[in-house]
Image (cartoon, rainbow, N blue to C red):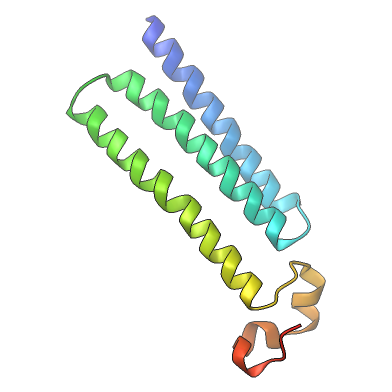
Length: 118
């Protein structure tokens, strides 16, 4: 096995571990904002590690450039999407507790303009 393949496998495994941590965090954490934070941070780290692994495997080629381009697009879009989701949840006055969302369905059905903001 070449050293390049070993480094690629190492980065892909580390990226996979980050994605597993993301899944565990989304299912195990209690409130909405903690879940969103776990998903955003670990997803970005997993993406960086996997992209580095793919780029090392492909080297400086057209395919490597495509991998880098996709990496940059997702690396820029992912934090922006996470921020937008968190901001909308904050504007909708969602505290993040699952109990609150289950007990008060008007949070999900009525827009913020029709409810009293806390």
